[in-house]
Image 1 (spheres, rainbow, N blue to C red):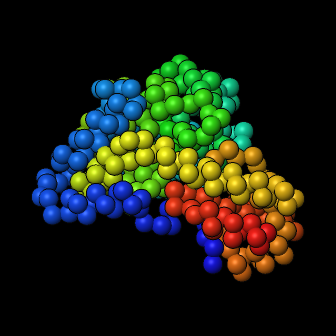
Image 2 (tube, rainbow, N blue to C red):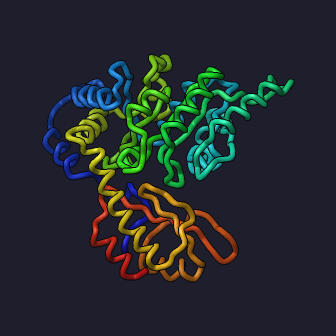
Image 3 (cartoon, rainbow, N blue to C red):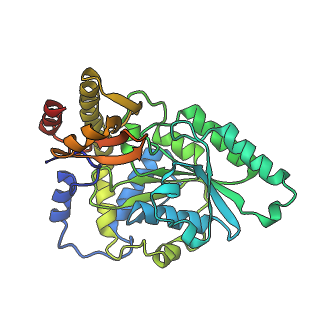
Amino acid sequence: MLDFVNDYAEGAHDKILDRLRETNLESTPGYGNDSFCESARQKIRKACGCEGADVYFLVGGTQSNQVVIDSVLRGYEGVIAAETGHIAVHEAGAIESTGHKVLGLPHEEGRLQPDVVRRYIKDFYADANHDHMMFPGMVYISHPTEYGTLYTKQGLEGLSAVCREYGIPLYLDGARLGYGLACADTDVSLEDIAEYCDVFYIGGTKVGALCGEAVVFTKENTPRQFLTLMKQHGALLAKGRLLGLQFDVLFTDGLYLEIGEHALKMAALLKKAFAEKGYRFYIESPTNQIFIVLDNRQMEELGKKVNFSFWERLDDEHTVARFVTSWATQESAVRGLISIL
């Protein structure tokens, strides 16, 4: 079977595995207090253009979202997100389980719009009963979005301005950030994200690492005892060197962007074939997620030879399917899929 289900099905990039083997018997302090983590922090700070950033390595994306949101918000505050946002749909209520409601708003192809966010917050405070309601305490976005779309620099700047206006932080989920940064059409850099966002994370799990994400606070705004909170939430790895080492490799010699570029090259090849063969795109994603409308018979037949994801039911006769390329996608697999489309 050909596999285009997601971008975390395989293990890790060979350079990471090689480095893990080379350093396997080295003895280091635990919980991120090792030389590998410190080296990775320095490289990430440099890449962000933010020498004073605080960088923490957490075990996964859901844990990163839960720890960051719960540590930043007060008990009476919720988090604004697109209705399709990862924390609103595919994280099993992880945010709500900590007592913080996800406040879902309409979106444009997965992207929150500054005017929509401003209107929501303004209307909230105009409501005479707002003391009895869940306060908007943070804005959450992902880049790329759940639909593989990207924010523009202007869009980030606009959301940042709204957040500053109301004194709340802007948080960016970067689970697939490497694929967004590598996109030829984007005008958003890692430095821009560090400038406009108060906190974000750099995805490793979906971008070549075995596991792990790097959470970055850029405004001298790290919550008190953040490491302790990580441990309370089960997001702190005792063998922290395993996470730091992976990010140290990813941020050496441009590997993080190289990985993204490869996935986008494979995605472009596949998109071209879908278009030439007359398939209908559900949304135009510039990154490594491809959304195709299939009639239910097509989906059943294709599923006998290819693994891909059900995304959403479009109507009684059609389904949106998602095909994903990654750092590990081989051109031979893409050619194989093209041959059976």
